[in-house]
Image (cartoon, rainbow, N blue to C red):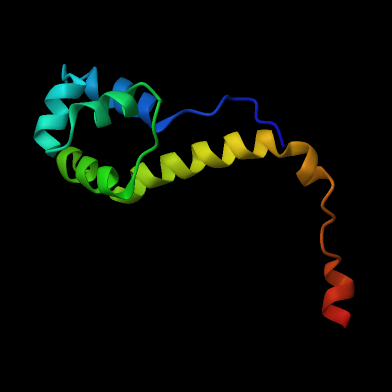
Length: 103
């Protein structure tokens, strides 16, 4: 279940693809979004997750979709949890579809 590429936190995408190219600080973005500066700073530093509230605000400002931001977060969370649960997941058998459909 291990991936070749490390998981990318949504904050890294925010920082590298939006804040830096637009020459915008986390504080300036926070003002535009009407949220606490620390929320965007912590997100951009990978210290906190994207919430639905933040996803909606980022989507509006950057003309993306809230699903874009939520999918980045879900993908990150799945990769982190898959690595943490790798041994446990290997111990779970898969359903025998032929047997299940024949029953």
